[in-house]
Length: 163
Image (cartoon, rainbow, N blue to C red; front, side, top):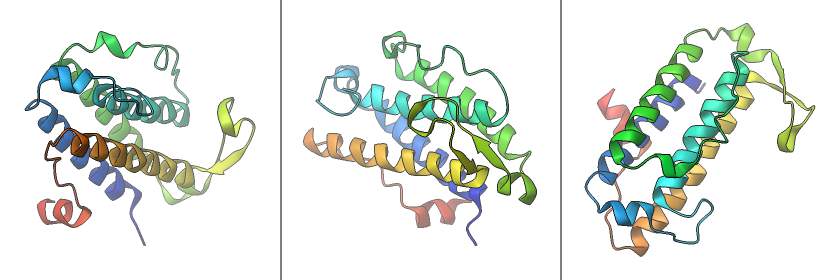
C-alpha cells in the first residue's frame, strides 16, 4: 500500500531539486514566456505550489483567500520562491501529520472550481495534488529540454535511496 506522506515526500524532494536547479540558470530563462500552461518556469512552479497551498488550507478548514490572487511577478528571485515554497511545505507537513486512516477515508466537499459540490475521500484529494505536481513537473522537463538545460533527475527510486 502506498503511503500518501511518502508521495508528498517525493514531491517535495523533486521540488527542492528543481528549485536548486533554477538557481543555476539565468533568471531571464526562469521567467521567459514559453507558451506553456502558466507561461514560464517560475509561473508553472508557483502554480503547483499555489494549488497545493489552497487545497491543503481547504482540507484543514483554513482560509485560502488571496493565494490564487497573488501575482507570480511578485517573486523576483529564486530566494523569494524558496521562501514561499518553504511555507507551503511546512503547512502541508503540518496537515499530513494530522492524518489518520479515518480522516483519509472521510469525505471533503469542494466549493467552487471544476469539482464544485462534489465529495471525495480526503486521500483521493491528496492524490490529486500529487498528480497535479507530476503533470506540471513533466511540463518543466519539456521546457528545460527545449532550452538545452539538463533538468534535475528526480526519480522516485533516487528519492527512496536518500530517505
